[in-house]
Amino acid sequence: MRRFIEKFINYLRVEKGSSSHTVKNYSLDLEAFAIFLGDKDISSVDHLALRKFLAEMRSKNYAKRTIARKLASLRTFFKFMYREGHIKTNPITAVSTPKLDKRLPVVLDEGKVERLVQAPRIDDPAGLRDRAILETLYSTGVRVSELVGLDTGDVDFISGVIKVLGKGSKQRISPIGDMALGTIRKYIESKNEKKVRDKGAVFLNKSGRRLTDRSVRRIVDKYIKVASINEHISPHSLRHSFATHLLDRGADLRSVQELLGHMNLSTTQIYTHITMERLREAYDKAHPRA
Image 1 (cartoon, rainbow, N blue to C red):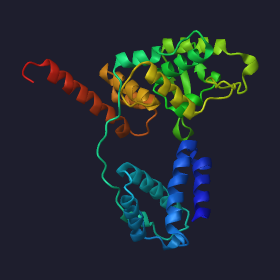
Image 2: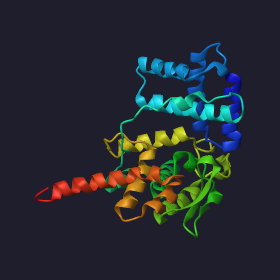
Image 3: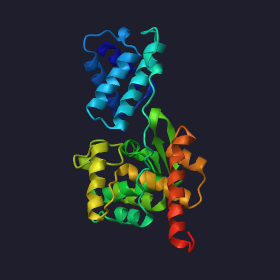
Image 4: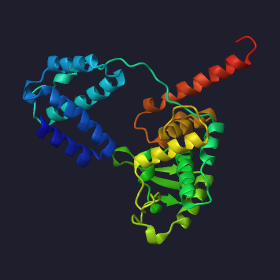
């Protein structure tokens, strides 16, 4: 099993160009299944064995979403195994994904986004960097992995766009607002070139190296507290807020899909549900006969 997992992970990295975060999740999910299998050969796995694995996770009180994610990992793995001819039949086709409750993403209103973005002090390079990070996340809707991957050559100050390397190594051009661009420019100009280790990277840590996803999450958590925001949010919440605010102000769904780098329109449609819920709330509050 582990030999095949290694082949599959290599396929994700080399051929699909999956992010390190995706590769890590697949590795963990497949390792859990390998432990469950023990000494059994992969060719002996049938739909009954898979259902037994699901039952074991339920008995350990795993959340539905965790079980669904692990099942999705197995689904992709067995599809790869079948396509490459390592197994004669794909056992997971007979296993259905557990039904999940619909959960809308957390979105901040425009006032709270403004408070969050304004929270870092800009009288020192670290605060200037943090302001530039928050401005960029909200101005462009990029994922954290896309943000930390930005190089100075990806920022076009004249045209007001950035070049983003998204999921599956797919590039897209994203507009970026003047306020975010201005803050990035000031931050780049404030860098001490003698301390810079990763010359190309836009956002650096204290050691002069490219920031990691985890560092950005810590930065956002810090300013959530500074801005006294009570909602349980993450850097991704700025992406959700970006998309929802665009739709609230009349942007069409296809344009938002392009800006977010979504492959399928159905992924973007979750934001129309948020917008409709907000309209409903506004109607219920404002209409005398609601």
